[in-house]
Image 1 (cartoon, rainbow, N blue to C red):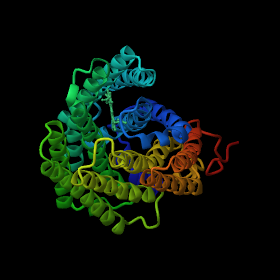
Image 2 (spheres, rainbow, N blue to C red; image 1 turned 45 degrees about the vertical axis):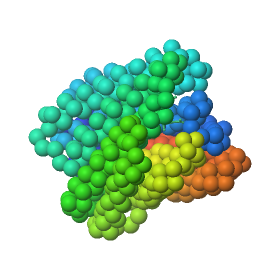
Image 3 (spheres, protein in one colour; image 1 turned 30 degrees about the vertical axis):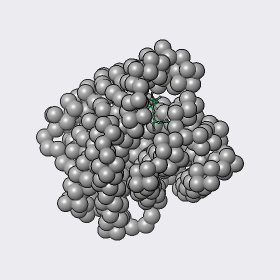
Length: 441
Ligand code: HEM
């Protein structure tokens, strides 16, 4: 094994990891969803200007949040959590069952949102909740068997509470769309659903796992500042739940601002930790995931800053500032980070499957040879340009800029997906040249 591969093998795959088909099916599904995001972005981005609560925007939002982010997180967790905890996954079979629930649920839920057919919406929401519930059960059982739970494990555990709360509220909101039983509570539940799903589940998990992955990608594991990491964790969980509870019960703005302030401080701690890990890294040079993670951290700060400004200025529910906060949190922070990490994780897993058994005997490609670095960087620059134009569109309330941002984002995703196809082609090992000629007679 090469040095780079050796360093990654203990963090991404080990004897505790499940069979590769389990994470692979989720990643493949998420990437198909991402293709849909790219194809619909030029039409969907102008919807952002209309504020929340439109059916078509809800479809676009959930295509991103559940279809891409949620599904990718579930698949990546099945791969990484057993490795992080050094404990085999509690049940691979249940993991596969959760895939079918999520697949059927997402298709039905999105079709129900789009067509307004309430039975589809309700049954889709229920199937998704069952799929997520199985995922939670598998992870909880795995956590319970782990010999030790470190800072990363605590992030994973805390994220499951966020998901459990957020999905329960999501199902209530779905059932409410026809019946309207939530009445005046609807907006409060919606706000809590968003905080728990985006903040309590996705961001908590992303930050925790990033500590482990970035340390490994850049060979800086020993440089993680433990006290800062624990402080960041406390600020994150405290901030998210204070914000969620105060949004749910309509508590005074000062408490909401306090929650958002803690949440913002957690993003500052994360950015500081990232800076430290990169500064002290032993693998010099700019690794492909680095620009993505730096942008993700900056976008997280921007999203949280917008929430605080929205609260302090008492922005109305339909204000674009809320749309901007959620958009930069989901696309800007979470999806950017995922693309960067995908380049490392997927490449490694495919290399491990196709080339590891042959390394030493044959001339196998390096990890970096599985995709085009220049295309990855062009894709990053275009994606960043798309985010900047989308900020302009929201700031100026401009439909034209929104369409341009959608087209730019589509091109950025396109570059990423071309590289994904290049990586996926190595699933079947090509003919390789032997490293040493044998003197066979
Ligand atoms: C079990 C899964 C989920 C269900 C059943 C669900 C359901 C819903 C429903 C029904 C709404 C519309 C609210 C209304 O009409 O009152 C909504 C809005 C929203 N959800 Fe979800 N959701 C789920 C997962 C997620 C996830 C994973 C995220 C983020 C990571 C998310 C983020 C949002 C956002 C940002 C909105 C507001 C969108 C807008 O109004 O334009 N949801 N959700």
